[in-house]
Length: 115
Image (cartoon, rainbow, N blue to C red; front, side, top):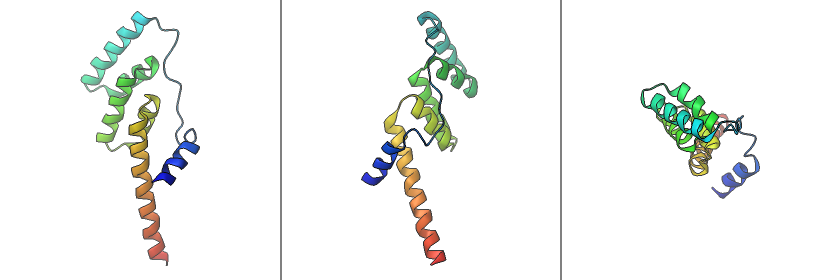
């Protein structure tokens, strides 16, 4: 597992294309209003619109909730993106390590088949 962590640290910027979160031109009061709207949209099932607001405002809790939603939808790449943007490094690392374990298993199975 320590080797997996080393690979993650060395290649952290190369795995997923991301955008910078948060818009410094938004006033604090507008940011709060947008976050409320994003939460409302998320709670009513309008996830993609909520995600845009969470990214624009750099709202970490909303990004983490989007990541959790993507996990439930079996969209691990989407979850990784949200956790990276949050930043929620523990969740990002957990999914990355699980993915690495699956890939290792596939490679071992392929080696057995191809001998």
